[in-house]
Image (cartoon, rainbow, N blue to C red; front, side, top):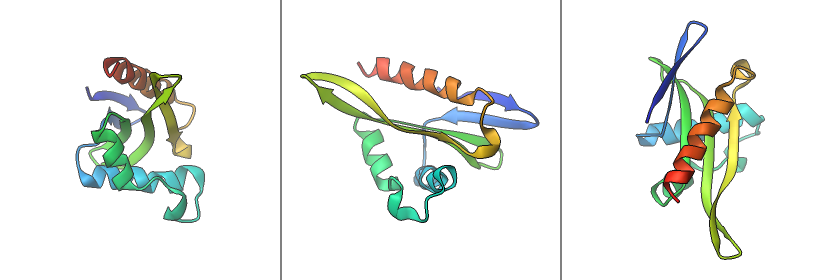
Length: 118
C-alpha cells in the first residue's frame, strides 16, 4: 500500500503508520500544522492507534530517509441513520508542502481504504 513520490529533491512515502513512533510523529505534526499551543488540543497518539486498529484510517506522509512527517489523515468509523460511513476528522500538511498535490493523492488513498472497509 505505500506510495512513493518525488517532491523537488525529496522522496515522500505515503503509508499507514507502522510503529508507536510513527503515531507519535502524527501527533507532533498536528501542533505544527495547526499552530496548537501544546498537546492538549491534539488527537493523542494512543487514540490514533486505537482508531486505526479498530476500523479507522490513519495515513502519514514521511520524508525518506529522515522519517520526517509532513502530512496526516485521520478518519474514524461513524454511523448515521443506521448506516456506516467514515468521518474524516483530520487532514493537514505542514506549510512548506502545501499546494503540491499531495493532499489529493492522500485523499484518494483514504477513499480507497474506506471502500475496502465497506
